[in-house]
Length: 215
Image 1 (cartoon, rainbow, N blue to C red):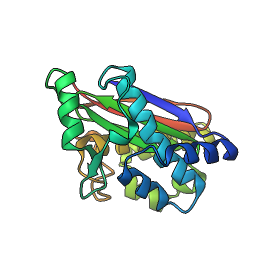
Image 2: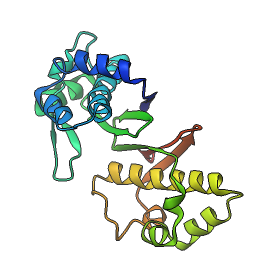
Image 3: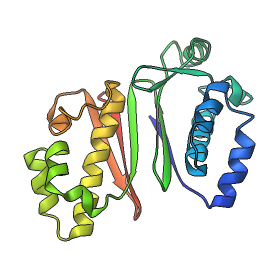
């Protein structure tokens, strides 16, 4: 498994990157980016795809000169992207007939991308605000043990970090499973036997979790 996380740059840099990438990405990605009305969304949509392209080349899943425009894809009913048949065939050929899976995520301060030869999910989230700690929201998203962990935190900042780490673990797992987010199963999601290992880390501004298939 390989992954990359990038901080969001300043507005001027975002504008320059969007202008550079718009004509280079596949048509579907360009259309998706332009559906965002704000610069941040356009930047994340385009840069995440470029980061995926860079990871695939850096780890020899794709030839060094493979055009970004040829990294085509489709989306399922949940909006999860999958490589097109042509890209899948090339990746399988170069990876000894083993599929290459990927996952993308972005938040207001970072973008995250992961690839693996088995199903993988990644999620990055800015540290939650205190509103996320309200009982009504916690009851819908966390089970009793998780709520207890959040409430035992030393202070509000630690509680927000604990919530964010747990939330990213759930989101990463959902992405790896490819089932779509189901609010009814979210509280007990981490207690299920899913066949995935979860790895989590954080910075001062965000938490990130990756779900990788158990060996």
